[in-house]
Length: 269
Image (cartoon, rainbow, N blue to C red; front, side, top):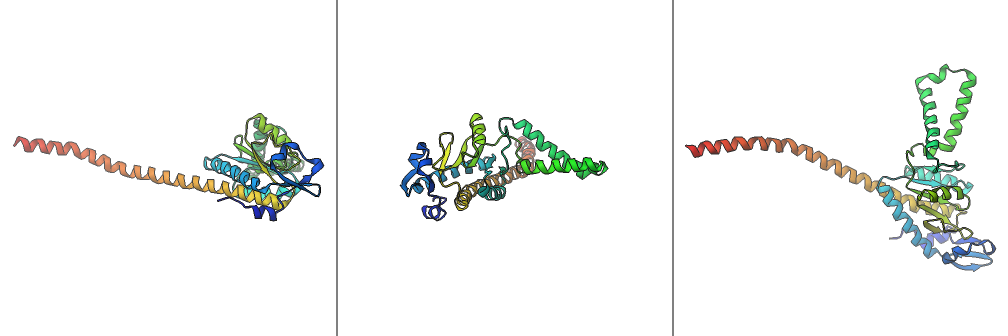
């Protein structure tokens, strides 16, 4: 069953592309027609592409991998932050920190700095500082939280990148391409789909369109996480049963020599 349908995408305005004069010819396979100087996206292909991307993301979530969601444009920020946080995935909705992927250790140092400040506040060290130092540290902490708070749990490079608006997030896409990290993206008619591994042809400006695609993808991620949880519980139960059977097996093994001795004594008589 498809994760979304033609009518829902149509109602969300996902079919509206950009003006014909702004189009990228490489998006031709995903364009249905041109109407009043505007390109119309083929939503039948969008449905198929959403399913492909969703299935891939589900498998990653099931394997315990992280997917980094990136959307810094105004109409996408809140939607992406809310949906990604709901499935416990990292996201970037403020400025993309240059070198976030290609210079990941430096980004991790900045996150550790934030954790160090939190520790200072908890253990009371912060209270012993001068007023000026307190102000500087508080400002530094607020800045780090704004830019990196949403990726605090990202301990290693993500296994995939999801992007809203390929043109605006070009730096993120370039870094992912350089490190061979798969990129899933909503691609409008004015964008180049070549650097994208999983192209979702759709209107990347309308909030409803973005929300609909995010619902489908995050729903798949939630399914993957749930399946992973069930598998872990089954493994736990199996290991517990194995441990529970161990004393019984040990008892049976200890009884075997005694039984053999009894049989030997009876035969001797």
